[in-house]
Length: 81
Image 1 (cartoon, one colour):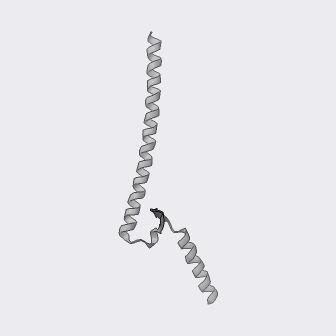
Image 2 (cartoon, one colour):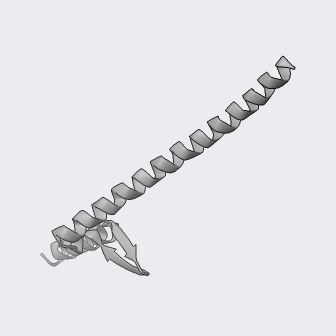
C-alpha cells in the first residue's frame, strides 16, 4: 500500500504542477486553488486578452489595407495625368 500512496502523491504533485496559473504582481497563483469568483474573473481577463489580440489583428489589417489603398490612389491619379 505504501507504493500506491507514493504513486497517488506523485500523480497529485504532477497534476498541481500542470495546473494553470496566473501571475499577479510577480506572484504565481494556481487557478484550481481559487474560489469560484476568482476563477470567473480569471476567465473574464483571458477573454479580454483574446479580444484585445483580435482587435490588434483587425487594426493591423485595416492599417495595411489603408496604406495599400493610398498607394493605389496615388497610382490612379498619376495614370490620369
